[in-house]
Image (cartoon, rainbow over all chains, first blue to last red; front, side, top):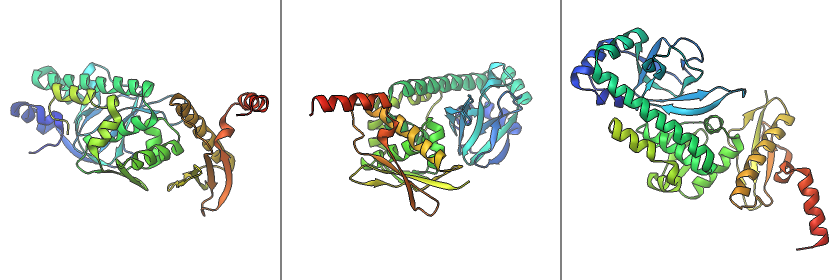
Length: 232
Length: 92
């Protein structure tokens, strides 16, 4: 069977064979919650397509996105680290497909199969790098550069050049006001890097977007490729 | 909840808000514009840019203009008073 999930792709044939009977395919609509804050995590998800957002809940109504995972990753990382819950909320922000594995099955697999455990732990390191660079970007980058970074990260995790998201969603993702989203998209559009229409952002010049994002983009992606393999 | 659109007019062109957002009333729409203006000023000051004569044009669900929020309204009143005093004593 062909998997699009990069972690499953990175496994040996034997390890993939161990995992395969434990995986259940499911359609994941936009908004679907994969992990609820402070509730026991009963399943982990290998995403095949779509995009999930890891949201840090705060006093704010909606929280702020602190990480994202698509076909590059696994949702339910606390299970790999001997934790059964997290304060974060994780939900699908772009609909997709994923393979579910029960928490108990995952625990047994991790105990018995070193190859799987090592690959998944290396992903934890890659994901941690992503979130630390998000923290750095939030501290030093302009809103436009953060927007460019975010669009690139989303683009990495899908085949199409069209990113289907409302401005309201982008505002939540970047922790900014909606009109600020409108303005920063407008400014990226003015440079010919993207085309923004209602509910849709089309990447027109990927290389230009990377150049504009500068230091905001690239290090976590290179780490991912060093630790796991091809990201895009 | 009614839908409000927050277009941005920078003097030269108007950047359309195509989506709008659902908000309880005009006060909430003005507050969204003001919070955004603070965010835009913060970025502009750091980058030594001027927001100039930019303003928000608030439209209702029919896209009829119902209010205007100037970017300046987000600046601290004491700052505006000080700057006004300065420009009176030493005109540019």
